[in-house]
Length: 231
Image (cartoon, rainbow, N blue to C red):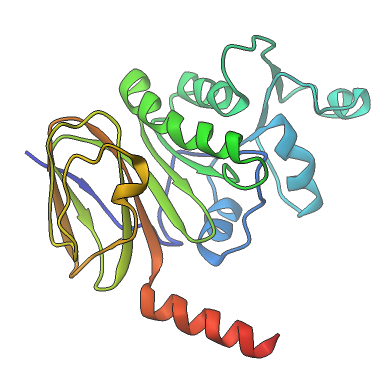
């Protein structure tokens, strides 16, 4: 039976939101999800930024290297320090949320700033699915990543921009996308595809990542054109 991945919108609900220390969300959908989250766990570098934006949080997790003594003293009841350096703060926050019983997790602020951190954060999604057996979505200001495996169905809409990133598939076939797919050798080969209707399917024999945009290509182009006119 194929696993189904719904569209993400501002009304999507998650057990927990993990706010990472990349670019703070500014688009409507990730901001709404952040402001209405049931539980917010900040990676330690993101906590100050979240406070400056008027945000609340329930836990702060990380190695503590970006927190002052005064900050640690003020929030000592909800700070959870993990000093080991084998994993990043995003993974430490993920383990913390799993130990709280949360299995459906949204990641915000995981992209932007240093590109090596961005790639590392995105790449961890596959490990989280395999090792922790959780449902996770990584939202940016433009769209969202999910990790998937095997045969899957994805909700979409006509003109939605879609990119595929092969992890370990030797077979990879799509139905309902503008361009034919195969088991790409390089990550860039599966980018910039497009959904033809309200759903597309993937038949595969391994793991892969999917990125879907919030807006269609035509709508993105209109917004970009209007922004250029305003500038």
